[in-house]
Image (cartoon, rainbow, N blue to C red; front, side, top):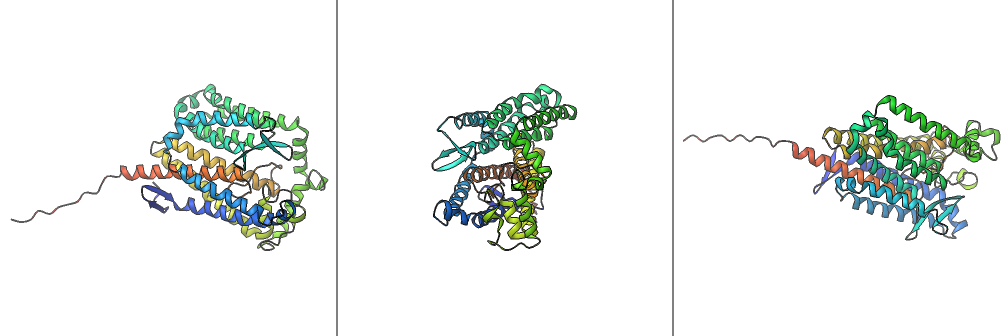
Length: 394
């Protein structure tokens, strides 16, 4: 066990202090920045200055409540329901495409309205993908390491999910679930030669999807040189880069950003990181990156401890969640900084959106559950110290 990290214990549940601190920090900074980047929208759209902040606070509250509920569910229960959870998420992807059922935004039909909250179905698919893949690895790790068939079997359902996501269309989420699956297989010990072949197949398929879809190709070409068409295809990236340039080291000050008011599209969702860069500067950017680094570090540390304890399913749950958090955060930040083509992926735990925040909080709750069970198991395995009793002289 890692003795250097402080662990708080409440009852029989163990809280990982660095993990809790990083998650709460991301939620708090995200809420403040969503408020800063959306107040001007509230007056225009809803005639209510606090429309977005109040809704985001409701999302965070509901997410934390559901996350707490998930911490009460034993890890092994997730292994049993994993395949059914993934199938349910596929059915929801079908439902969202039914006319009148799904909610369309900017030409993409990705949302279902549940209880007044728009849930992006792809976020549920990512959560289910981690649980399903962890269960598959636990059951078939030997086959996964020895044959190509063992690697392709779990990808059948992932390809179905990817096809349904592309119909929305949602290319970004398709890439995320494939990275989750392949990353978990790699960590499970898949043969390197077979893994490279599979990676090549996926890369070629992704390239073809980009080449044969004009709007995706435009995003790639505009990413290479956004200034060549700064008022059209390169507009988003150019404005994001201007936001970074204006922020310098300490930023222009909270609430004083200009890009969010007139130029940055979706400043409170996909381009929230650019608002952070403009208003909080390099210092704010480094704080956010640092908090995500702690979150990913703790995810992999928890996974390693679980693996060493013989809890393979719990270990790959934590690995999968760490890959998800890390890759999605990396893509969002990369898009904002101009090192990756524009994709519609939210910044985990920070961007505005009910589905994203709620599902991410649930994922963090599952990670806490893994940590608590492993900590309890390792604590119970430690033998009790011997107590020497001195005999009294008669």
